[in-house]
Length: 112
Length: 475
Image 1 (cartoon, one colour):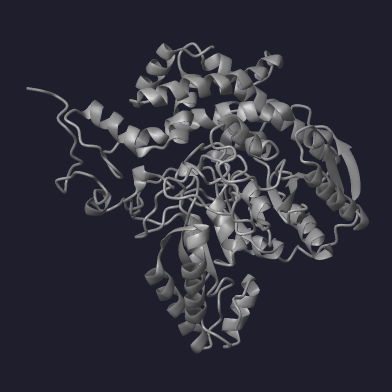
Image 2 (tube, rainbow over the protein chains, first blue to last red; image 1 turned 90 degrees about the vertical axis):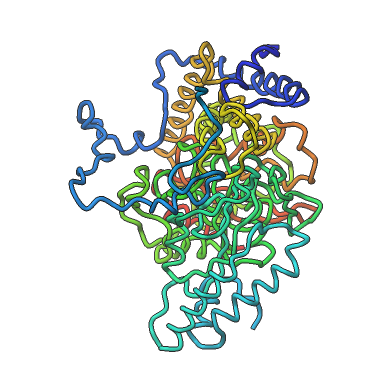
């Protein structure tokens, strides 16, 4: 068992989840089973392999250029005026569980 | 008039004044009301919006004006895509009451070309699953065999087309979620190249792997749908600024002489014998059509699922952090902010979503980042290189879409790893970003559909569609 009860509690805390006792027990079992399967990645020698975070660089980066110029495909001109309008205020808060019409309201964070 | 099943049938019937867009929309709603209680494909219907669009199309037809390519065509949308004024849940209770203020670009483009949007389709919660049993609302039953799953996560999108409740649909594919349900339900499903179709308005699961694509009855309809939704969108920086070919016009270009790759890694243990036989027969058919069949090797294939489930869950854990009960969606009552976050997420997310958030958070946490996340990203490079090498030798790769036909409801629900393995032949295309399509290639002895998967080079959907179309026309 790689993942312990303590790990489950720690990770749930990082992820802003509470989890019931039953869910924690299930998580312990499932994470261990999945990670045991994932461990086969260790069979591969990858010391000299660059990580791939996203796809576009593989076919769009200009490898003849240096630094940020390699990624010219992802650049656009600065917009100086004529910015796109953002959502009107009332529309932006319309889905909020709690709002005074101007702000999103949440339970008190700071006690005075 | 019977319920028309291809895009051109519908459009031509309206253009020829044999029927109206309004009559067609009503006919589809009648069918949905009659048949969907047993299927469960739809979560929300948007009749008002649909009938307004149908009336607009009927106005054009009555005035003798030119009709757009999708005029009056009933289309439904997986509920992970935002629709202005129409509830969008992502199959989750945490977004049960969410009404987006804007449209997903792909939806807006379909509507601008005349499509009538019928409603929103059931799916696994946040598109996380391979059977649509993770929907927080109700499972979808496979129209071809109701005791079986439709596949997932876009199970509603595949089932709606298979049950003739929509002419075409949109789905999303992060690890196979379009192709695998297309295979299970016996319809066509296409995942485009990463960057081909804007994801603006798609509720994000794993941003480096998420794609939007169509389901349809025919390859030609899938090509028409792709042509409509593809292309640069200033609202999505990952959408590529590359011209969109006329996929439909190119469909009939002969495929003779194309090289079709077959990789032994896609025919190993775990592949159902009847699926193998059907896919091998389909490859034989491509040879008869004049294609050259070439052996290729994709040696890292067995590492795709473990790499995928680390990358996908890591990205999901970050993307789903936004569901905190503050700006939209469900909020649990609580006296403090941090307790409010936890209680909201605990009550709002289902088990599989929590499992993936936990796995992804674990893989990104201090002490495990290098061992899991960085390692998986490096293996992703190896998997992408496998395809680079193979596509030096071939134009298209042919493979099974899924290792088995549709499995039974409940069969894998308690074993997440078994469920993940349903995506064993599809996840690699997401990791590499290449396009893939599933086309029906026969049935097993229980009349369950089997899918042939075709994969192509980045942005070469045109060749992939040509091969799929030629195969479809020959069978």
